[in-house]
Length: 305
Image (cartoon, rainbow, N blue to C red; front, side, top):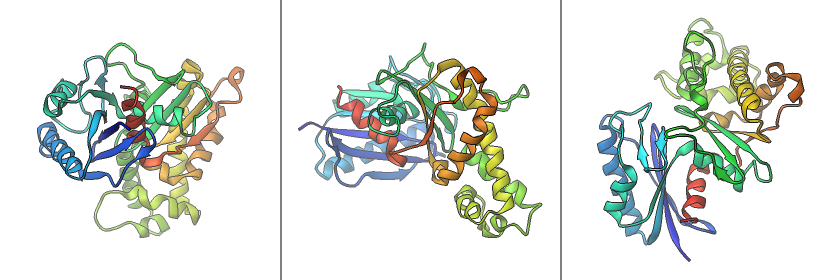
């Protein structure tokens, strides 16, 4: 049976999975992205990871890559990264094909996650499926008839760059993991007695990890932050619904760990922003594949090569 390698290049992490049509094989290779070194350093990390997987017995017949940023799918090239310098117009497919002598497919990471959720995940049986992820950035993907939608290059479902108001605020600037971390720190300064505030570590970073436990205790500050986040996301999702009319919405990414409280909060306010002719809004579901949505989508796509 043919084997494949599935590579995820994110704003903070790198992952390489080995798999076949039946699923993943063995443990993945993981590393923190060398943000300081930029695209060049990260490309070296990827080659190291592939070499490690091969030393562990992997014999891939193809490689699928999910990249955290706009991709020109037709050329297999990176358009840019919104988090890391040095990726602009990088011909990733041609470079990786030369380095490995294998067929390569390059996709936007959210597109791959959307594909996984539509084919075997939370959106299975629905069509179309719109997926959005809340991580270091915010992305989106649209799957129609079990095919990833591609607009004019580099046109993708850039959910994270939808405007929330005329001042220039976008979904990513308020709803990404980094944005939520910053909002928690900002409000914690004026709420020292909050359970959420008291649970935060001394060093800044990953504050959103403490949101779910505080919500479980009904901490007022945590509830406020949740409602702000849900309101922004519902407003943005209303545009998706009015334009695309998906059969279901799927929420993934790092902030999906908040789970049902976040899903329910968005679902509760969504009807307020959707015109009554389109009520009820499409169901909103939590990711089935979780943090493995991107490599799962890559595996499914690689199996079509």
